[in-house]
Amino acid sequence: MALGVLAKGSIVLGGIGSSVGGYFLINNLTSRSEGNIRSTKSIRDKLVQEGYTLLNFENTTGNEWEKIKAEYKKENVDAKRFAGVNKDDDATVLAGIKNSCLQYLQEETENEDNYKLSRRWCVVPISVQNKLKGKTFLKTDAGDSNDNSDWDKLVTKHDSHSDKWISFETGKSTEEKRTKIKEQCAAQSKLETTNAGFEDALKNVDLWCTKESVPKE
Image (cartoon, rainbow, N blue to C red; front, side, top):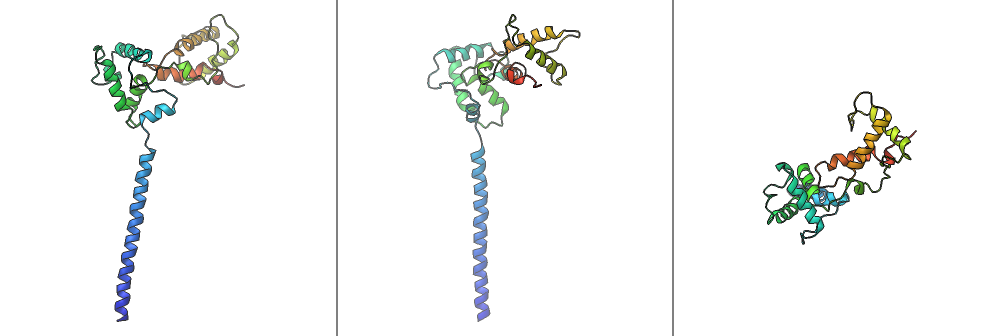
Protein backbone atom coordinates (compact mmCIF):
# COMPACT_ATOMS: atom_id res chain seq x y z
CA MET A 1 0.00 0.00 0.00
CA ALA A 2 2.79 2.40 1.00
CA LEU A 3 4.68 1.40 -2.12
CA GLY A 4 1.67 2.26 -4.24
CA VAL A 5 1.44 5.69 -2.64
CA LEU A 6 5.16 6.26 -3.17
CA ALA A 7 4.89 5.16 -6.78
CA LYS A 8 1.98 7.49 -7.33
CA GLY A 9 3.93 10.28 -5.65
CA SER A 10 6.88 9.63 -7.92
CA ILE A 11 4.65 9.79 -10.96
CA VAL A 12 3.13 13.06 -9.78
CA LEU A 13 6.52 14.54 -8.96
CA GLY A 14 7.87 13.32 -12.29
CA GLY A 15 4.96 14.97 -14.02
CA ILE A 16 5.58 18.20 -12.17
CA GLY A 17 9.28 18.01 -13.02
CA SER A 18 8.51 17.51 -16.67
CA SER A 19 6.08 20.39 -16.62
CA VAL A 20 8.56 22.67 -14.90
CA GLY A 21 11.33 21.58 -17.26
CA GLY A 22 9.07 22.12 -20.23
CA TYR A 23 8.10 25.55 -18.94
CA PHE A 24 11.72 26.63 -18.56
CA LEU A 25 12.62 25.24 -21.99
CA ILE A 26 9.75 27.05 -23.70
CA ASN A 27 10.39 30.22 -21.70
CA ASN A 28 14.08 30.13 -22.63
CA LEU A 29 13.34 29.65 -26.33
CA THR A 30 10.74 32.42 -26.23
CA SER A 31 13.22 34.76 -24.55
CA ARG A 32 15.82 33.98 -27.19
CA SER A 33 13.29 34.55 -29.94
CA GLU A 34 12.22 37.88 -28.46
CA GLY A 35 15.87 38.83 -28.04
CA ASN A 36 16.51 38.14 -31.71
CA ILE A 37 13.53 40.25 -32.67
CA ARG A 38 14.69 43.13 -30.51
CA SER A 39 18.23 42.95 -31.89
CA THR A 40 17.05 43.08 -35.50
CA LYS A 41 17.71 46.52 -36.97
CA SER A 42 15.83 47.96 -39.91
CA ILE A 43 17.45 50.00 -42.66
CA ARG A 44 15.52 52.99 -41.32
CA ASP A 45 17.05 52.49 -37.86
CA LYS A 46 20.56 52.15 -39.24
CA LEU A 47 20.34 55.29 -41.38
CA VAL A 48 19.00 57.36 -38.49
CA GLN A 49 21.67 56.01 -36.13
CA GLU A 50 24.35 56.91 -38.69
CA GLY A 51 23.14 60.51 -38.68
CA TYR A 52 21.18 60.66 -41.92
CA THR A 53 17.85 62.49 -42.13
CA LEU A 54 15.03 60.67 -43.86
CA LEU A 55 13.05 62.49 -46.53
CA ASN A 56 9.55 63.74 -45.75
CA PHE A 57 7.39 61.02 -47.27
CA GLU A 58 4.16 62.91 -46.62
CA ASN A 59 5.12 65.67 -49.04
CA THR A 60 7.20 64.98 -52.15
CA THR A 61 7.47 68.62 -53.19
CA GLY A 62 10.36 70.92 -52.41
CA ASN A 63 14.06 71.18 -53.20
CA GLU A 64 15.12 67.94 -51.52
CA TRP A 65 12.75 65.79 -53.55
CA GLU A 66 13.54 67.70 -56.73
CA LYS A 67 17.24 66.99 -56.20
CA ILE A 68 16.49 63.30 -55.66
CA LYS A 69 14.40 63.23 -58.82
CA ALA A 70 17.04 64.99 -60.92
CA GLU A 71 19.82 62.64 -59.81
CA TYR A 72 17.60 59.56 -60.13
CA LYS A 73 16.88 60.44 -63.76
CA LYS A 74 20.64 60.64 -64.45
CA GLU A 75 21.33 57.10 -63.18
CA ASN A 76 21.50 54.75 -66.16
CA VAL A 77 22.42 51.56 -64.31
CA ASP A 78 19.24 49.62 -63.56
CA ALA A 79 20.67 47.94 -60.45
CA LYS A 80 21.34 51.36 -58.92
CA ARG A 81 17.69 52.39 -59.17
CA PHE A 82 14.52 50.95 -57.63
CA ALA A 83 13.01 48.09 -59.62
CA GLY A 84 9.85 49.14 -61.42
CA VAL A 85 10.37 52.88 -61.00
CA ASN A 86 10.72 54.39 -64.47
CA LYS A 87 13.18 57.26 -64.32
CA ASP A 88 11.82 58.74 -67.53
CA ASP A 89 8.19 58.97 -66.41
CA ASP A 90 7.90 62.39 -64.78
CA ALA A 91 4.33 61.73 -63.71
CA THR A 92 5.16 58.68 -61.57
CA VAL A 93 8.86 58.79 -60.71
CA LEU A 94 8.54 60.61 -57.37
CA ALA A 95 5.65 58.45 -56.21
CA GLY A 96 7.62 55.38 -57.24
CA ILE A 97 10.71 56.46 -55.31
CA LYS A 98 8.62 57.31 -52.25
CA ASN A 99 6.78 53.97 -52.23
CA SER A 100 10.02 52.04 -52.74
CA CYS A 101 11.65 53.93 -49.88
CA LEU A 102 8.76 53.15 -47.53
CA GLN A 103 9.16 49.47 -48.40
CA TYR A 104 12.96 49.26 -48.29
CA LEU A 105 13.31 51.21 -45.04
CA GLN A 106 11.38 48.50 -43.19
CA GLU A 107 13.76 45.76 -44.34
CA GLU A 108 16.62 44.38 -42.28
CA THR A 109 20.12 45.77 -42.71
CA GLU A 110 21.53 42.42 -43.84
CA ASN A 111 20.57 43.36 -47.40
CA GLU A 112 23.50 45.64 -48.22
CA ASP A 113 22.28 46.50 -51.72
CA ASN A 114 18.92 47.69 -50.43
CA TYR A 115 20.66 49.65 -47.68
CA LYS A 116 22.76 51.48 -50.27
CA LEU A 117 19.72 52.21 -52.43
CA SER A 118 17.92 53.58 -49.39
CA ARG A 119 20.84 55.77 -48.37
CA ARG A 120 21.09 57.12 -51.89
CA TRP A 121 17.43 57.80 -52.63
CA CYS A 122 15.58 57.99 -49.29
CA VAL A 123 17.55 60.50 -47.22
CA VAL A 124 17.96 64.25 -47.42
CA PRO A 125 21.01 64.71 -49.68
CA ILE A 126 24.14 65.52 -47.71
CA SER A 127 27.71 66.08 -48.88
CA VAL A 128 30.75 64.14 -47.72
CA GLN A 129 32.11 67.26 -46.04
CA ASN A 130 28.90 67.88 -44.12
CA LYS A 131 28.68 64.22 -43.13
CA LEU A 132 32.20 64.55 -41.68
CA LYS A 133 31.46 67.92 -40.08
CA GLY A 134 33.08 66.79 -36.85
CA LYS A 135 36.46 66.54 -38.60
CA THR A 136 38.93 69.36 -39.36
CA PHE A 137 39.54 69.60 -43.11
CA LEU A 138 42.94 70.57 -44.45
CA LYS A 139 42.94 73.59 -46.75
CA THR A 140 42.70 72.62 -50.41
CA ASP A 141 43.07 76.00 -52.13
CA ALA A 142 45.96 75.90 -54.60
CA GLY A 143 47.44 79.15 -53.28
CA ASP A 144 47.12 78.23 -49.60
CA SER A 145 50.32 76.68 -48.24
CA ASN A 146 49.47 76.79 -44.52
CA ASP A 147 48.76 73.05 -44.34
CA ASN A 148 51.47 71.92 -46.75
CA SER A 149 53.53 70.21 -44.07
CA ASP A 150 50.50 68.11 -43.13
CA TRP A 151 49.76 67.39 -46.78
CA ASP A 152 53.35 66.21 -47.27
CA LYS A 153 52.95 63.79 -44.35
CA LEU A 154 49.84 62.45 -46.03
CA VAL A 155 51.78 62.04 -49.29
CA THR A 156 54.36 59.93 -47.43
CA LYS A 157 51.57 57.94 -45.79
CA HIS A 158 49.92 57.44 -49.19
CA ASP A 159 53.18 56.25 -50.80
CA SER A 160 53.50 53.43 -48.28
CA HIS A 161 49.81 52.58 -48.05
CA SER A 162 48.73 49.19 -49.40
CA ASP A 163 45.38 50.48 -50.65
CA LYS A 164 46.28 53.60 -52.61
CA TRP A 165 43.64 56.20 -53.36
CA ILE A 166 45.44 57.83 -56.29
CA SER A 167 47.78 56.25 -58.83
CA PHE A 168 50.79 58.48 -59.48
CA GLU A 169 53.16 58.19 -62.41
CA THR A 170 56.70 57.17 -61.54
CA GLY A 171 58.92 60.12 -60.76
CA LYS A 172 56.23 62.49 -59.49
CA SER A 173 57.55 64.91 -56.88
CA THR A 174 56.06 65.38 -53.42
CA GLU A 175 54.73 68.76 -54.52
CA GLU A 176 52.97 67.26 -57.55
CA LYS A 177 51.48 64.50 -55.43
CA ARG A 178 50.37 67.02 -52.81
CA THR A 179 48.62 69.10 -55.46
CA LYS A 180 46.82 66.06 -56.84
CA ILE A 181 45.65 64.87 -53.43
CA LYS A 182 44.39 68.37 -52.59
CA GLU A 183 42.45 68.48 -55.85
CA GLN A 184 40.87 65.10 -55.17
CA CYS A 185 39.98 66.08 -51.62
CA ALA A 186 38.30 69.27 -52.82
CA ALA A 187 36.28 67.41 -55.46
CA GLN A 188 35.38 64.32 -53.43
CA SER A 189 34.27 66.25 -50.35
CA LYS A 190 31.51 67.89 -52.42
CA LEU A 191 29.91 64.60 -53.49
CA GLU A 192 26.48 63.97 -52.02
CA THR A 193 24.59 60.85 -51.02
CA THR A 194 22.83 60.89 -54.41
CA ASN A 195 26.16 60.14 -56.10
CA ALA A 196 27.03 56.48 -56.69
CA GLY A 197 30.56 57.17 -55.47
CA PHE A 198 29.50 58.64 -52.13
CA GLU A 199 30.56 55.70 -49.96
CA ASP A 200 34.09 55.50 -51.40
CA ALA A 201 34.42 59.28 -51.25
CA LEU A 202 33.35 59.30 -47.60
CA LYS A 203 35.99 56.70 -46.74
CA ASN A 204 38.79 58.33 -48.74
CA VAL A 205 38.14 61.89 -47.65
CA ASP A 206 38.13 60.74 -44.04
CA LEU A 207 41.41 58.90 -44.61
CA TRP A 208 43.32 61.47 -46.68
CA CYS A 209 41.85 64.95 -46.28
CA THR A 210 41.48 65.74 -42.59
CA LYS A 211 43.71 66.93 -39.79
CA GLU A 212 42.83 63.77 -37.89
CA SER A 213 44.22 61.58 -40.70
CA VAL A 214 47.69 63.15 -40.60
CA PRO A 215 50.25 60.72 -39.13
CA LYS A 216 51.41 61.69 -35.65
CA GLU A 217 55.14 62.19 -35.21
